[in-house]
Length: 198
Image (cartoon, rainbow, N blue to C red):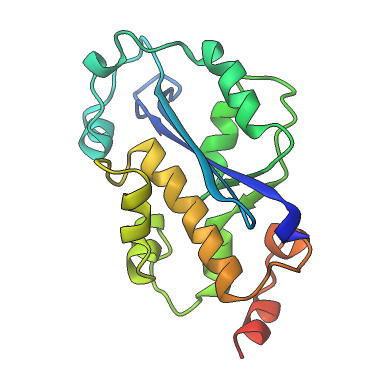
């Protein structure tokens, strides 16, 4: 049941894709939530990479090489990431990037995954833009997110992870899903969502 489950959202910011290079993470953020406890843990870290941060990526998240000078490498963060993602439902908004960067830890076993992008499309099909920022702004969730992680903004990994978990919380509360099985979130059925909204 959803009310008995712990969820942890994760978000990565990246160096951006350069010609001939694979993308690399430069920041990670997580936020944990459950029905009885609410948001119980938020955590973030920069991630060192020797890869150049592209101009386009830096324009989005504002992270510079100077921010990464004393940051740990991705593999050094394994204990902290494992602590937060082990034995929980993992949440992300469009989880492709997060799954790809976590593949640095082979056979990590994290999951199952809840994708708040898929959920928001199922829950709010009338929205024309289901990007994380637009959905949260439209639903009036930004104030709650900013209160949990003050002095941060969109495209900061901690802010976006917190936004994903607050969006999940909002969907669960809006549709009274506390007593529903986890499968309701793992495989959202638009027909089922419409019936819940009636």
